[in-house]
Each structure stands twice: as C-alpha cells, then as structure tokens.
Length: 612
Image (cartoon, rainbow, N blue to C red; front, side, top):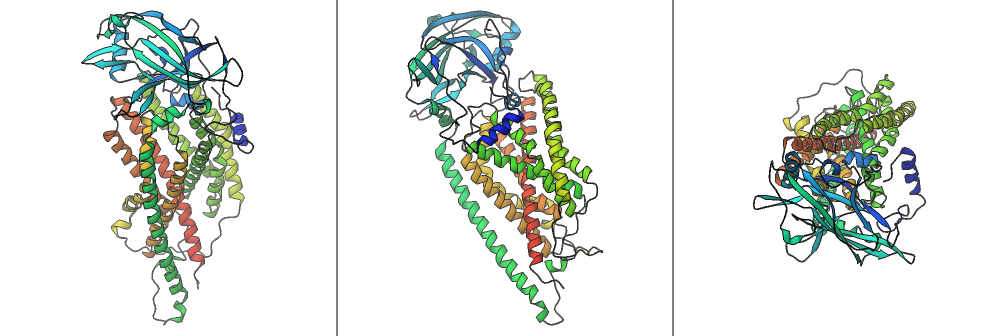
C-alpha cells in the first residue's frame, strides 16, 4: 500500500502535467511479474456485510493464522474505510497447482461458534487479496445469461434453519504471460467456498455449527492456475462490470440531463426577459409623469447591499462551501483521468481529505475578501471560524460515531493514533493555509458596488408565507435535487452495498448541472424576494440553495427503508449519522453556489439601472 503523505500527494498532482493516462491505470502503477515457483501470500483486508456496516479485522475471527503475522502499511483512506490488511495462512506458488491441503484445525469454544453463526446469519464477506486484486465469487445473473462476480467470499451459509461454515476454499488464479520469458502476470483471482466436516473430503458432509456448542473446524484450500483471456490492464473490468447496470445508468442519466437542461433553459429565458423589461421600464421612468410611483426591486438600491447580520458566520460557510466545491471537482477530475482508481485502495478518500486541507487557501481567500466587503473588523476571528467550522463539525460528529464502532469492536473505528495524526495534519497544513488565504483576501480591495447604502434601513413589508425561508428552501431544493437523485442512487449503492463506483464522467456532468441549477434557482428566488421589497437576501440566497441537502437526507432515509436491509441499532445510528453529514456537506456546497450566483446577479442588476 502507498501512504499518501502530503509530499507524495503534491508530487502525484504535479505528475498530471507530465504523464499521459492510458486505459484504467496510470504509468505510475506498473504490473508485477512473477517467476515460476515464486511464493505469494494471500492477504485479507476486512470482513464486512451490507447488513451491518460494521467491518471486522480478519484476525478477529478464529481462522488459521500464519506462522509469522504481518500488518501491512495502510494509507489514510484505508484506515478511514476500515481496512486492516494482514497476511493469512494461505500461500500460492506461481504456476504451481496446489492439491487440497489442510492448513490447520481450530477448536472453537461456544463464544467463537456463536460469533461465526452471527456473522453467517448477517451474510458477512471475507475480502482476500492477491497481487492487489480482490478475490471474486462467481454467480449467474437472474436470467442466467451473464456470469457476474461478487467481491469476497461468504463466511458461511444458512440452509433450512441450519448454519454451515465455509472452511474449504478452491482458489482459481488466472494469469497472463509477462513481457519476459518465464514471467507471469496475475489477471484474475476467484474462489469457490465449500463446507466440509473433514478436511479435503467432500463426501464427509458439510460442517454445521450449533449455537452454544463447541466445534472442531478443519481449514483447507487448493489452488489451480488457468491462462486468462484478458490483459493485465483490463483485469479490473470483471469487478466493474458486475458493480453497476450500465444500461439503466445510461438511460437514467440521459433522461435526467434532458429534463434538467430543459428546466434550466426555461428559467434562464424567463429571468432574462423579465429583467430586460424591468430595467428598460426603470431607466425610462424619468420620461413618465411625476405621478408615477416606483415599486419593486429598484426601491431597494439604498439597502440591497447592506451587510447582513452574523456576517462572520456567513463568510465562514461560504468559504467552507467553496473549499468543498474545489475539493469535489478536483477529485472528480482526477478520478476521470484514472489517478484515483480502485486499484489504489483508499486513494479517493485520502486524496479528498488531503485536497480539502490544501484548498483551505481558496476558502480562506474568498472568505477574507467577502469579510472585507462586509466591513468586518475582527479578521482573525473570522479566519479562525472559517478554518474550524466545517472540520470541527465533521470531526466531532465522527468522533461520537467512532465510539459506537469501538463499542462494537469493529475495525472501522479509527485508531486514536491516526486521529492525532489527522489533527496534526490539519493544524500544520489546513489551518495555516486558511489564515494565509484569508489574510491576502482581506488585504485585497473589497468587491465594488455601483450603489450606496443608506444610513437608515428601509422598512420591509409583510411577506407572503411561501417567501419565508423554510418554505423557499423546500420549493427551491426540488430542481437541484432532480439533477442528482439518479446519480445519488448509484453513489449510495457504492457506499452502502459494497460496490465500486467508476462512472466519474457522468458525475462530472451532474456536478456541472448541479452548479448551474443551484445558481439559477437561487437567482430566481432572490429576484422574487427583491420584487417584494425585501432586501435581506444574503442569508436567503444561501439557504434556498442549501435546501437541496434536505432532499438528500430524505432520499437517504428512503434508500434505507426501500433498498437496504440494515439490522441493529448501532448500524442504523451509523447510517443516519453519516447520511446527515453528507447532507450537511451537500447543503453547504450548494448554498455557497447559490450565494455567489446571487451576489453576482445583484451587483450586475443594480449596475444596469440609472440611480438618481
């Protein structure tokens, strides 16, 4: 595993300027070629189930252990995901078939038997790794026409209310001839699991476990080698083809794009026509009778750019949102280029955390300049709030959820040492970058206005109920959510159903459309609010676009009840806790987009009219 230290991450980003990407892998990831007879260890990353979301370490179960236990180095993404890569008692010799061989016999006490029974009933999978390739279990599609693959092998099986433990593993390794004579590359790793009461004797009957009853379990395995038909660069296609239904994805995405683009064009056309008419009318009002009385948004030219209440909190949210947006865009682009492929375990999570820290300078800069525009005085306090608000919210919530993982004994619990390392990384990298960006942004000239703010605020008329903040959030959040809800299904499936998400080109299109939709819907709501002579649009522009996060959380609840079969209080708390964090993150990003678009819109509109 490659540890993503800050220096290595920076080097990886700079390599984008000089390397050309071909296929699914980048040139920095080279194939490993093995000689005939060379010994390779089979490793394990975790034992997990889609019904609990509580991963466990391979060594937490009473499997056969190797003579020398090795813990392999893990990067930040692997640790946060819950992977703990260790060696197993299974080894293979390159191009050397291994007949059924007994590894060991484990005498399980009643507690260990009950642990295996619990994992089998919850359909846990054991994830093994050979040459950085996960083991796959072959199965047929419902119509029987396709052969699909599922990552990992089951711990056991429940059949007619009886529980059977898989203790015999038949590994099939596919290879491809290497670039040199006598060298071989591994292109496939499959397993067939069986339950044998006696080692290597299929006719002895399956091994049944009975609750609260000790058992003696013999473990065995065999290895066969088969020349594959696919090249090394395409060996991950097996897992990616089985991960998603491409046909449904294509039709759903295209349908969503057409609908969203049509609605976006319609909104843009209405806004342009309405604004042109209003601006033309206001600029010609001096030619009308003196009895003409102005109404609408032009009356607010002396108040529309009045600094908002709680401006420090607002600039912190906007800075965090822009920081999140830059991080998401960078991760999507890097994934599109193949730099963050599933072959590099944990690279996406590690890159997201590292990029978020580095993009602190972006959030700090625009927060500082906006704070200067609001005539703020305590820039250090505002910079500290920008640097700590979102990371503090995420870290404190994850720390609480980590207690549930600790209590369950799950390997998904982040070790305290890694927490300290992550905190030190944030203090040494992100916090200074935010302050540096805020400092230079605050020194920059504020955003210029074409109107002057009156000293006495103008009274605001009574607003209709649907123009209040919460109803506006619900009404405005529908359109941006419509741009992403199809993609959310695949993202939620990848996160909670142990699938691999790879269609980042579609995600990039959805990202662009989401930004456009949030900008348009926020501008429309702000325009309607200004027409009702309400100049307090600063927070409103943020909240109406952030309303999409409400629908994301609601969709997460719908996905939980309709798609998932999660059992247990701890698993439910973890699901809704992480879903809430995702929704808040989504809302902060979309709210920032809405604010920026509305700010540009208001400055442009009031610069286009003649103010006496």
